[in-house]
Structures are given as C-alpha cells and as structure tokens.
Length: 86
Image 1 (cartoon, rainbow, N blue to C red):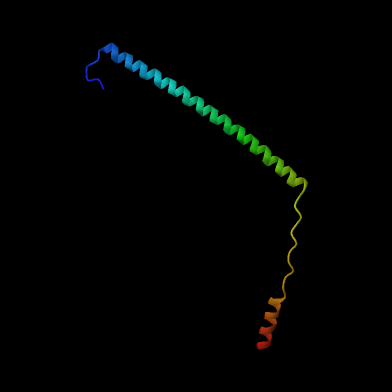
Image 2: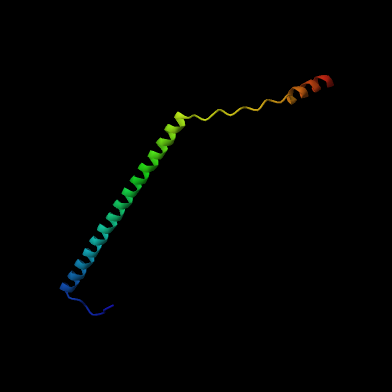
C-alpha cells in the first residue's frame, strides 16, 4: 500500500472506481440469478410434464390388484386346543 497521503481528487477517483466496480459486480450477479431462475423454471416445467404424463398413463392403465394370500387356519386350531385343555 502507498503510505503517502492522497489528494481529494485522487480519493474521489478511487471512490468512483470502486463504485463502478461494485455496480458491474451487481449487474453480473443479477444476470446469474436471472439465468438460474430461468433454468429452474425450465426444469420444473419438464418435471411437471413428466409427472402429468405418468399420472395420465396410470389412470389409463391401473395396476392389477394384488391377490391376497389365503388366511391360515392356525389361529382357529390354537383356540380349539385351549378349549380342549380346560
């Protein structure tokens, strides 16, 4: 760093340059945010279309209900054994 005192004109020029740099950075940051927002919206639109297509296909071709396994007679047998024990 320069230890020499700077004149008012030099300080003003430094402040202006710093302010311009900050404005440029702000514009770049806003452009990046806008681009990210557009990408998110496109991705969301694509995923929504895929989900709606899948839901429509599921409604058109519902899955077959699963067959329930036959219940076993073991609980009844236990009840009969308890009745015999008494």
